[in-house]
Amino acid sequence: MKNIFVFILSFAMFAAHAQKIVSYTDGNQKLEGLIYSPKKGVANGNAVLLLPAWMGIDNNAKENAKELEKLGYTTFVADIYGVDKRPKSPNEAATIAEYYKTNIKDYQNRIQLALNELIKEGANPDKIAVIGYCFGGTGAIEAARTNMKVKGVVSFHGGLGRDSSRTIEPILTKVLVLHGADDFFVPEPEIKAFQDEMRTAKADWQMTYYANAVHAFTHKDAGDDNSKGTAYNEKAAKRSWQAMLDFFQEIFK
Image 1 (cartoon, helix red, strand yellow):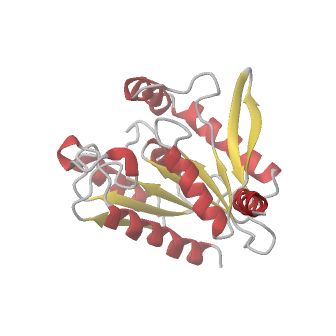
Image 2: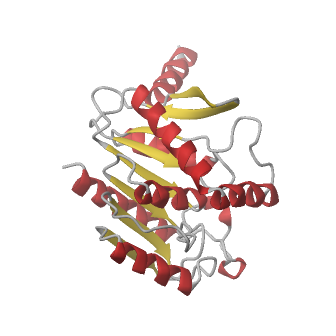
């Protein structure tokens, strides 16, 4: 009897956080994202495209997608690199991420393909937000820069840089940037250029700084040594998550 109860409990927990692999392609490149679909009684009709950090679909991305699912958001975790190109080390991740930052149209294309898959999975195309972490935060801002059809974008400790040769176009979607006040991977000139860009683009944008927070402050596996440049900050992680939820309340009215 005890074993049956444990089985039923385990099944219920799995059902509450069921994830499904979604296979799609970019030309000959095979991609595999993850879709998290809330149960009917929980679903709120809104959806989130989640862009992972530079290691690809990591535990941070999966955990946050599960939390969003619990709150009623259909969530798709994008595969930017491809099933056979996922980095095995930070050095590999740095090289691959740099390729997409340099070849920005390829990055934009992979984001759009993931957005298409989210819609194919049943998301309302008029009720989608894009969020991203680190490298994925850069991608979230690119979704705004190219005016992808989304209600808003949220960048968690993302890079803010843009090739100065690119034309600044009006930004129609709302932008929220959640930034570590001590993140030295994003230098002050880059921040100033980003803010000037937002003004020129006449964007509806917000930028919130978190004290004593460096790069990757939402990643629990980033350690706690700020001097290394990446570290988890529980207070900043919780505050930024709540800021995102408040932003969702605004854009999904």
